[in-house]
Length: 236
Image 1 (cartoon, rainbow, N blue to C red):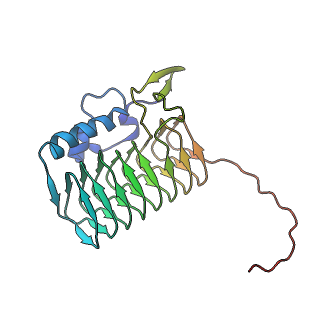
Image 2 (cartoon, rainbow, N blue to C red; image 1 turned 180 degrees about the horizontal axis):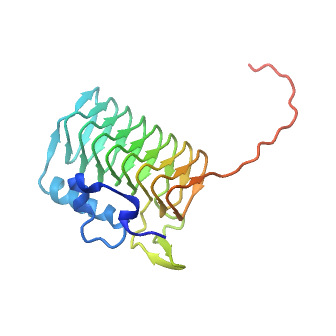
Image 3 (cartoon, rainbow, N blue to C red; image 1 turned 30 degrees about the vertical axis):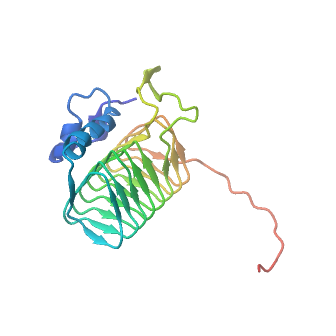
């Protein structure tokens, strides 16, 4: 398994915030905690409340936030700080952006989707009715409609990852996934807590994934379609 952030994310140097998040980290999952520290220091502690976005309807802004120009926020959106939202982001109706989230330039958050304590790099897109929790998305990564990134073990224990047949403790009971640049997860798929997906990998719709999935792969769960006879009945 790869734990080096450089395996998942390339050409991140043009993102000043992300450059800050990867300083002196050993494992890629540490980016999430670095993001929380950054937001506390730069947004919350300074009591920043800046909204340069175009607001298209009634929205809820809670706590501290920085929202840059060119961004469009549609009706029914709730943004609960501390959060940072970059330029030219599109946040569709009913979306919920929760504390600890950093959404970079040119990202898109779909209808009624929820982003919780996640880092989205430039051009990442989350479609409708998805949950992205405690996760790190690479440039132009795609999360399809209805995708769930499970961020807590069923037994609520600390999340561990397997490295060279040894289990390493992430020191947190909340962690979703890392998905590399230009990778995508298809509609109604789900990832287990502590999933790592390399760049340029496609997870096809209705697929459950876990553990480490290398770069440049196509992943699907084969399911057989079963046919049986049916009666002709008019529906009311």
